[in-house]
Length: 250
Length: 287
Image (cartoon, rainbow over the protein chains, first blue to last red):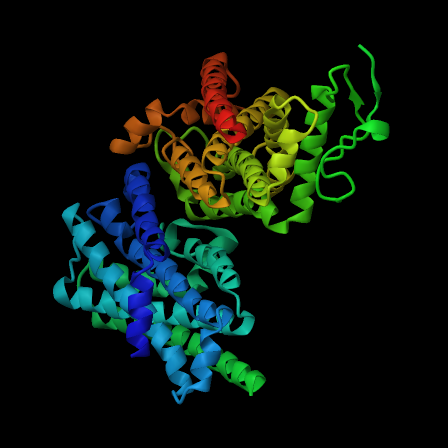
């Protein structure tokens, strides 16, 4: 019931998902036109078009932006006192967190499907077929839960929706210093080293392989492993912050 | 015309509150109004003080351009190898763009300050003050133009340290002129929106306008490298001419009149058009 409330509440506020949903498409439309000749550069994979190359990065961008917005709702619950009412009722404490993450996961699945369809309309399809799309969906939902967990931890720690919203630039920085928009092989120096270690690079590369080459379980497992580790870390953080808040409230 | 110290008989709005402009040091004309010059100066100073008092205001002007400069130069470092790219130094391409971007957001900050004043009711007190009302617009515009210079003292030195080519003095002067023009353009755009919608939330619309104008230009790659619909959009976007003027001192071909005059014309026309936009908006806010 609480998960349903979180999902419905999120989609009832278009302002919290329209920007996150459309902004990545705008960036992609500009980048596909600006950098289309870059596919001839050394280090670029043999992709049919720059648009197809961008698919994985764009989907992850939409998922990250939307998930951080979804997790601000938990901080809003704290700000408006709804959290105190939940804590006074006989509900499982963990369900408070899980229900909010369900909102992020549902959004992640929805936006992934939406972007795959939009890209297909413009000629950029997933070479891996249904199997590849399933891998991308799993990766993105896991990342949505991971970012949702990070937002929830921040929201529980600060109790401020503004603080969660202000963490948006950090997500943006992580996304940029990765292979989301250009392959790591074309980068150089310290920037390249950071991008190679960035977990987002692993997730994007695993998704991109399904888009450009085809379904590949070994590539998928590498990306999924990193995504699950990321989600487990942020969930542990969120649970720690939930326990701390419960202890403070008691 | 006789003048008298205002501090003795005409305390300015906000005086003593520690928040508003203090017109007490200005002289008053025979019509009982503080001359326009000192008022503009005080309003510009107030706008600059607001930056130090509201740390969030620093982000868009200084931190975001630095981030974009580093991120673009790092991610897109290979694009200089594309035939037709006018430099082989990616930082020389993105440093002027980051400065112009910071200048644009400096102008938007003026919109934020004005919207805050309107929402808090302080702008009503300014409108009732014994000052020429046009000085409120000119003061805000002056604030935008001064703010637009801030990226030049932060982003530019950092870019040069990281490896951007040192421009000639003329190139530096043209970058400075472009930043001031862009600060004026975005300041007028923001004021026009804020005067009409009278809310800080309206700044979202201002941001969209600024982002769209910058994205649909030669911000990331030159026209010769672009393909498809963006090429057509960037070709007619006047911001493209401003960026050409700003960048030329950093690029291999150096400063030329052919790349300068279209930028000057574009900047002048944009300022004239948006002055009309802000002026008609200001009339609405007075009603």
